[in-house]
Length: 521
Image 1 (cartoon, rainbow, N blue to C red):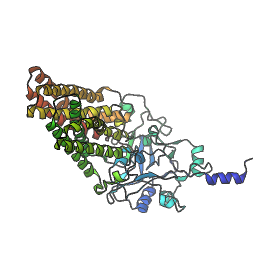
Image 2 (image 1 turned 90 degrees about the horizontal axis):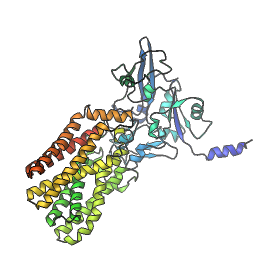
Image 3 (image 1 turned 180 degrees about the vertical axis):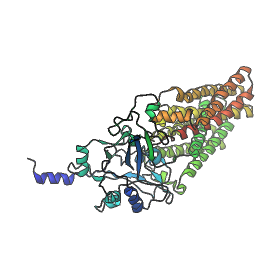
């Protein structure tokens, strides 16, 4: 027999881990939880912390409506906390994922990182917000607002570490599901009597009466225990909450200008280390051009923030797991090296620059590729979970740098050997970039959501950017470069370099936007 006093003492010392269960057997979709949440937190019109998703399954006369109370999943391994550069999204010791609107810079990294589309930018406070488990009520030993108003007690909260709590008993005695378990976030929001029609994003189609799996010609997966016997069950989305993509054209422009900032000086440094005839004029040109594009990159990034006046917080209180915070320091370090190089060049201290070049190269490479890891932190965006992405950003930076330096060399009437080496380097990186862009057509994608995003990129609403970027920034420049090298004529090569720069922006914009085009809820 376990000593009762000892058991009570152990329970008192056990840390609390708050969890929530939605019992779909009891939910009547009255939307009281939505209204209570809006009233409790003064949530503005147009955004919501919780809502009831509805899907109608079956064919007349055998039709059933399924409900899902949709909100933050209070993940144990919360991607929003990891991605936030200032710790505005944070996890309390009791497991609740909360936010501090006063230190949010409005970068939307948490929105991109969340696989459940549960975060929004408050249009009044301009900060990222979401369901925070009514933490202020929990601290006063009160239930969350949604729990207190639910007329059927379909929403239950409690301590997951306490086996005697109501949520622990429900989880132990019933089959429960979580949304998108493959993401490894360990959600603490559980559903009893859930259905894949509501759990799986895109399983039910707006305006379509056919499941995606059936449309692909595979075996029907549309029959569950509620639609058993229905020969061709339909899944029609009755009500959902629309969310726009968190990152617009400014993020695409930021990746493009950053490629130029990294690539120009990276190519100069590599050619200089290879004993190419690049003297003081080239030092000043490369360093000043890279600094100009780096400054433009920072301006675009700050303009994208919903709290641009707080941009300095990313440097004063960085959250080091965030690649946005790491990237900020990489860019600052790279910029500092560029300033030193430029000053030494102006002061005609050329001999002191060569030792710096070996330091500049890794910072330029990191500046070029860190965005790949930033996109990779967005666990909900399956298209971006691509191990080739760092290499692709590196190739794009080198391509941008070679294009700019080649144009500069021809206009300056530089040494013929240097111009030829730049031309061959441009040819090689063009070919590598074309291969990487075409990989979206040929490489299999690990998840259906990644495949859908790739279809949106290649055949869907972003096909203009994909094919236009491939043609203008890849295939046509390759043809021009080949003809120019064969005939030893500079004009086709100059046109190819200009087209390459335009095509790179189109490619990056299409990729960034297509990655956000698949619904997450």
